[in-house]
Amino acid sequence: MNENIQKLREMVRGSDNIVFFGGAGVSTESGIPDFRSVDGLYNQTYAFPPETILSHSFFEKNPEEYYRFHHDKLSIAGAKPNAAHIRLAQLEAEGKLRAVITQNIDGLHQAAGSKNVLELHGSLLRAYCSRCGKSVSAECMNVSEGVPRCDCGGVIRPDIVLYEEALDDDTVSGAIHFIRNADMLIIGGTSLAVYPAAGLINYYRGHKLVLINRTETGADAMADLIIRDKIGEVFSQI
Ligand code: CNA
Image (cartoon, rainbow, N blue to C red):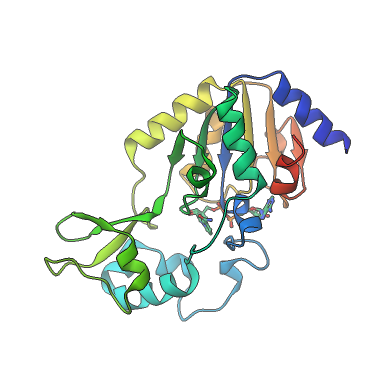
């Protein structure tokens, strides 16, 4: 076992108020592409850049084009939790981890058994009508060709935070509370490029900040321990 993993194990052993803050890199080992890796969605070619397609104004104007992208690229059907999701759920059950704060929209932390999951960007497993606000089954987005519609005629949308939209206030306050009070913060699988989510890590006040990411991030200088390996492989060893 390498020295960094050994250090991480010791830090986890000595902590009982761990918070995990993660992103798309947590789910790449489950087969879901992230945005910014070389094989991520931002390095593929579409008629419009993904940031544009995933924006509020684009969704309003071009729901057909949005749903083409959604069906083609945001499918999480069949994805299963990997060793990172599973170990995080176990750490919570052992009373060591207080919260998972995720930018992911794939529901895999809950599928692994995590109970306290704060979804900063919502979930593809929920949907509602953009006109009347009624909650509907997310299934209707998966099976329908074209644009799914509510009984009222409104366009159904996933319960995710699109670009240009605000994060949910209660989720953000909760995330700040957990990060501020954590004795250990593990950040993993995120480029920390998407704000305001990425800014939340600045509320951490402790001295056990661990970064597990395959590539550099803007928070490397703040970290007490940096691990550049695949996050599933790392968690399978702690
Ligand atoms: P990102 O900007 O794509 O960054 C991902 C980071 O993870 C990169 O720095 C990679 O180097 C790193 N990485 C990739 N695989 C691994 C791995 N196995 N182990 C360790 N590091 C790895 O994604 P962010 O989450 O930072 O950006 C936020 C966006 C991405 C959020 O709004 C998400 O909703 C959105 N997103 C979510 C999913 C999902 O739910 N699974 C998938 C794709 C995008």
